Amino acid sequence: MNEPKIFGIAAEFETHEQLIRAAENAYAHGFRKMDAYAPFPVEGLAEALGKKNRLPLLVLCGGVVGGLGGYFMEWFANVISYPINIGGRPLHSWPAFIPITFELTVLGAALTAFVFSLGLSGLPKPYHPMFNLPEFERASQDRFFLCIEADDKRFEEESTRQFLESLAPLRIAEVPQ
Image (cartoon, rainbow, N blue to C red; front, side, top):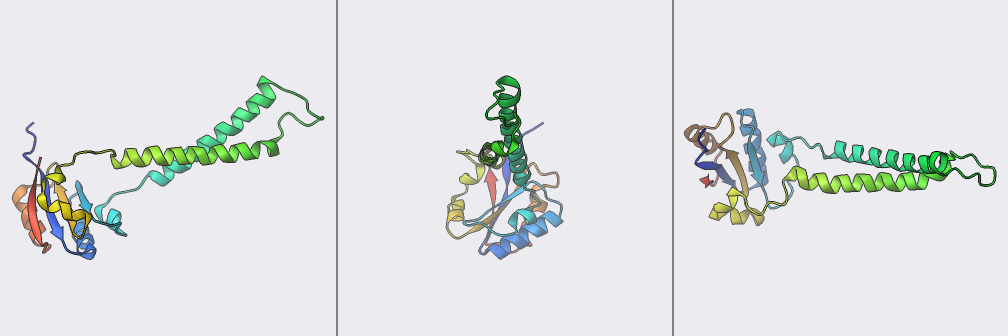
């Protein structure tokens, strides 16, 4: 199978409202492999692109695993591994386990958030084909870009270009590989 000669086709917009409308239209038109670039976080852009965020569920799972692991560690140490009768108290005294359980819940959630936020976003990424566009430098200043990637199922160079032109962007450019 031949690799596509281009990474995709990018459209440049002046406002974030135009970018959101363009992303919604592209998703409704059937494009799924696309990404948007903006100089600031744009509310609702991820939903317009059809992207789902799994990070909150992963952080919850990391917190639960950390909390259960901490509680099990304390229970095992006090009840199974090294039982000591201190002042007639029960070996499994759950109120004494709460502070460490809480701390390990927070630690598990924080580590999960850190690792998976980097992993799911694809960072670190020192190179991206969008860097080949000279205009893309303005994506960190005052311009908004929507790029439909060439490996999308619905991508055909000419029809995709015509679709992007129908969205009235400032400019359209091919993104070299």
